[in-house]
Length: 459
Image (cartoon, rainbow, N blue to C red; front, side):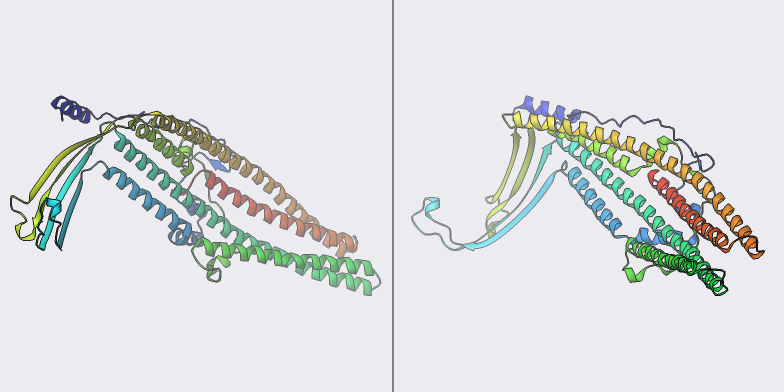
């Protein structure tokens, strides 16, 4: 190799020339999250948000799911693969060593050595090794390793997304079990009331103060109340089976301790939301998009470096000949060589550079979209939570008023100042109000979990 060219290549290698743009993370977005009056607070979101419910059963369900869920196992395997690919990319910039050995008993062709006589049978052998190194003059390997590290970070963020979603799904399933059990108790009470009303209607008919139509209507209301019982049992059983799946279990191995829940979990404080910047930094889908943008930016450098020559050097040596002569001067061999490869024409590689730049523009747009979508989800969740809380307050007032009205009508009927049908209507109104209030309570707890999910809470 020409001495001047060798000196220039060495200087270029030492200068650390790297093609393509250096990655710069997008500027942080300053966004202020609105609050639901009295229901949320701008306090930092704590890790493992489900502890805020102070429910030991929920805590155990979450921990068991996080240790055995199948989707988490898939995510862990994907992350392990990404780490291995990073190691492979980083190792591409290291020297490669090789060792070889061979032995054979053979008779070689005499004519191949320009001899007219046959050669004797010989024991032949060869032992050697080599080392090669590719100079990363234009940063192709370094950018490749940079892209691999960024891809690993994206896979890690997606694994966190699985955890965040899993924690929310476990909590939702548990709430549905508790809500179904609580609603079942209300419906069972409704059935008991309707049974008494049927007896009351039949007694009035026997006394000549009621009609067959009133008895039939009471029986219809009783049948309707009984028909609601299986719905709550179905909902509870489905949620228990979902919990078993989330915990990596078979359906018949569902968590029995969850089945014992008969009251919805409650927050002991306003729901902490933190600020918009913290939410954006925490959301795993945004972190994954940012890492994918970094990987796409690095691949511009990989594609650009393909436009320039690739230079390598190799050294081999060994001993080849008759076995008993191996190692002697006559059998020793060595070589040192340089290699330069430069592909022409460059229309294809230049098109790949443009494609890499387009991929980066797409990744940036996807990142911006993830940020905007996260803000939309959080604001929607906060608004929904606040409005449903106001709705629950109204339903609670309606239930209290219905209870008071039913009690007053019962007393009036017992005192002979109100008809039986008025009393029955008041009781039915109170039962319906209680069911609507309970359904709203469950919806509000699910709103809380959806808000935790939108905030990217968990870690």
